[in-house]
Length: 161
Image 1: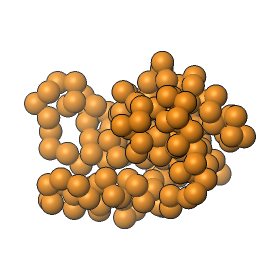
Image 2 (image 1 turned 30 degrees about the horizontal axis):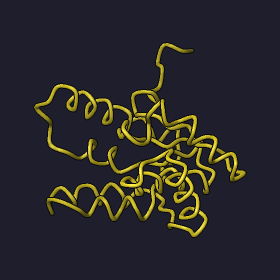
Image 3 (image 1 turned 180 degrees about the horizontal axis):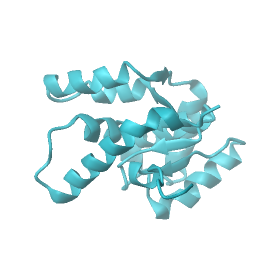
């Protein structure tokens, strides 16, 4: 059975967005596209209703592209258990109060036993200084902890035989 990867909204946005003039963002977009091409062979891709809600925002044409990608992915609902865990993540200050949606992405991943949470949100989600506290809260709730990473960290190493 292939490991599951929860695709957070920033990954979908980088995958479908117009090429950025910002060199760092453009690099992230290219890495995301490379990862996406090879991901179905190695992983089961999942997202949530929250990702769909976030993907609908903004420019209508861009939103259509994001939603088209999400049509191919299994979606998890936002459960009571996920809402409770997200609240704990915020109350403990593992995730700032203003970033409740980010806490919810983490919580949905943890409550559904998803192995990886893939994101380009390095401020509130894939943040080394927050990761220890996020893991502690999940473990205290007797849940597994998804490996929080960027597409770059989850690229296949083609040199390994």
